[in-house]
Image (cartoon, rainbow over all chains, first blue to last red; front, side, top):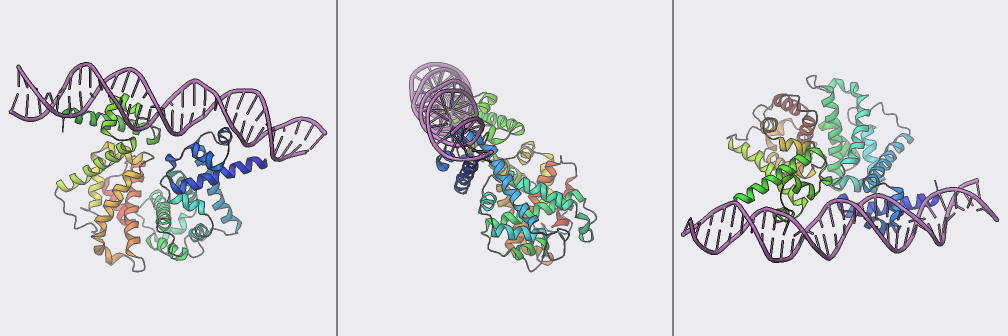
Length: 183
Length: 183
DNA sequence: TTCGTTACCGAACACATTGTTCAATAAGAT
DNA sequence: ATCTTATTGAACAATGTGTTCGGTAACGAA
């Protein structure tokens, strides 16, 4: 990829992040983005078809980044559901989010985060689907699997939102404990 | 209130609902609303400052409607947390939503429903706050109240969204049972 | 029915935002 | 050194926003 392309793309993403931390996605205009990124209007549209596509690619990139580093660190995710949550994917996710990514935190605390959360949701669902059987012992037999799956994912995302919204005061370990206890 | 005002207000709301069931809030224009409602542009703006205020008042009205009818039916809500969920507020809410309001279902299944869900959330939080002690026996002592409160409300809303998103296939009683079992 | 009030109309308006086009330029790759 | 391509800046039509205003007609109260 051309160095110029990379630079402008990054400039756009940076400007976008800054604006996103200040105002709602819908209230951000392309004009503001290109002013802050200091690029030409035509350049923006040569990179992104519309503002929505910018958000989409932004989310995708962040999302890939989370799960790539997760995998790079060599965790196998067979113990998703060990009792206390230690060494689970969920703990790793909480830890990762606390350490690394300001961008992700911005997205999670902004209003219009549905798109990003949906990426999260669908991937977590896949993850959980393949390990739901490990959870069999403790789950009530009266409740269908597809409800359980949705419940676990929802609870994780809501816990995450709550944590971020409250300023990341608790340790990842504590949050993971809360999460496992309520689920 | 002038009969003319009521009529236009209703016409706007109806047009808004129809459009909301077809496309995202952000993609709806004032032009479309007034065309469908068959009113003048100036009239729209004499009723609502902006499109966002329309959404706001729309949500408020729907939301009041839910809780008003809840109260009119003379339920006292002291048994929010009886074991199986029968005769709980939650059951009544599920029942009410299934029977009555197409508008609310439209809002719940649309993308941009954060505003409406927030009304829901904050009122449910108040409701639960005053009855959280009734739940003491079964909740784990290691988890702070404010996390529990958030968890219960989130789980209710996520259950509701899941139910609506899946086409209201289950009975309200069944959904309430699921909800109570996972919480 | 009458009379004063007020909501609606509709057409026009300035304004902001969007997304496109194009030739010129400068920075890339090889 | 040369070919390629991203960026620029300015202009552009098209669309949407929110306001204004005189004229009309429906309204509520007497």
